[in-house]
Image 1 (cartoon, rainbow, N blue to C red):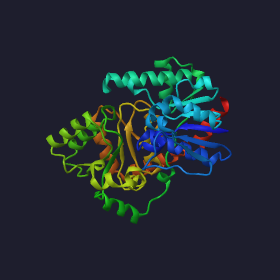
Image 2: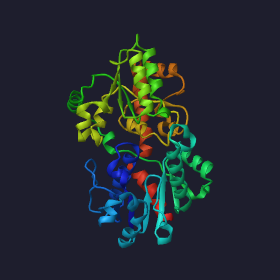
Image 3: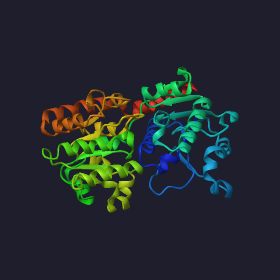
Image 4: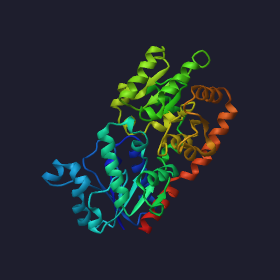
Length: 382
């Protein structure tokens, strides 16, 4: 088969949607080499590349397509798909080209979450309108819908009334580099390069209200006289980030919170922007703290489990799906529970080690082969 992908985020996104896209494309290429994979990319990328004998990057050609690359991606790309003989097109992040059904090309779309429907107040009115229109169109017109968790599947049915039989849950995997032990020398080198302390807790994700960084900082404040361990934050944000930084300043936590994404060396480092140093950072941490109120899946949880890093996460949404029996669960609204979990993991080494081993075993359910198989089965069913 000739399989096409909306590869915008595979080439340009350094967060969850990008990691999902790159990992899936590479896994399919490795485990199903008999197929050809065409990666439709609206603009050249300086940060990410995907190379292989059966991987073909397709950029817009001609003045109009290059000048209006968004229009090419959302509609005009159909001409290139027909020219290349694409059998199946996979919208990896909530979208498919307008009118694709008229081309006779079968289509699949991955829906990661419907957070804009659940928490519209955390978006602008225009964003909610645009996202709702795109997501709903994709769910209605794609031949098959992939949900990345049972939680997301339930939301697609609830909000868009998509028939259940049209939706398949295909869990995602993560970069296999997280599962490879990083040497002590490499970890020390990375810590030195980015001025990281020898011991730290870790938070990875956008700094958005639902991801609940503020409550982690409140837990850190509760522990100020008991646990002198800083928090390293990888991620960025806007309005909510300012609330977080205000709390840091007002409560004298400046030396306890390291916003690594603001570090000049990190910002100028391709290895940081492309996340290739993340396994070393994960494996240097004491625990991943991810008490989000709501997620589509929560890829940092899986990355941490693969890294044998203890995880503190929420007992709500899809996070118990991601963490299984390998995570320490807390009520995300309770700063006391978050603080208690941080304290227990730091002081109770037996508990932390048990958590790491259980997490590693649970992570095997999300290996690259299983995730590639699940998606390929969807392609074959279309």
